[in-house]
Amino acid sequence: MNRLGVRISRALTGGLAAAAATALLSSCDGTGLPGDAKATGSTAAPATGAGTSPLANPDGTKPGLAPLTSEQDRAAARALIGKVATKGRGPKTGYARDRFGYAWMDSAPGGIPFAHNGCDSRNDLLKRDGEKVRFRAGSDCVVTSMTLQDPYTGKTIEWTKSRATTVQIDHVMPLSYDWQMGASRWTKGKREDIANDPLNLIPVDGPTNGAKSDSGPAAWLPPNKQIRCSYVVRFAQVSLKYDLPVTAADKEMMLEQCRG
Image: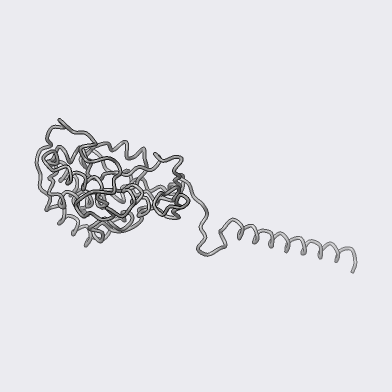
């Protein structure tokens, strides 16, 4: 082979090697492996929502909070919200968190889902909504890490127990709100039920939950607009289950979120 032929042969060989190396790198970082997504953190691209439609999850035992996008679902949502009673918000006098039992108990007395299963309600909810859940050695209850598709922000959160407050359990219908709307007159057992009922509990981004405080829908809604109709449906489901009214302003805002 003359010198020109040798140079051409070497160039072709080098190009094939580079192509092979690129293919190998693609498979190593996970992009070429079916069903094996790259690891993501809280800066991942926002999701519109994950999990189950609240209309298909009336007891709160299924994970997540999926958006309601069809007109049929939104009409059903408005019909549900329409059943919610209204009244003025009463005083906060006498409210304390421990009036609803200690956090997070496994002994709520009213037959709510997950109660008396040997695992506290916080860990029950982390298990319900988490993906890639890992447990403490020797336990099938205490969650030490998981991936959460946070419905309130749309973020993917890689959570570990060492940074526990990055994910908090939100009471959709806040306990202080419950107190002001009638729970102050309940038995302690009924208050323990609503505080630990999975229908009223969603693991979410901690700072976002802190920003909500004890607000109703007229004052606070999830930043993720895609999920707002689902959120107010869940609020209505808790209201109806426990026969607790909402303020007129809250009900109007709830209906507004599920209009076309």
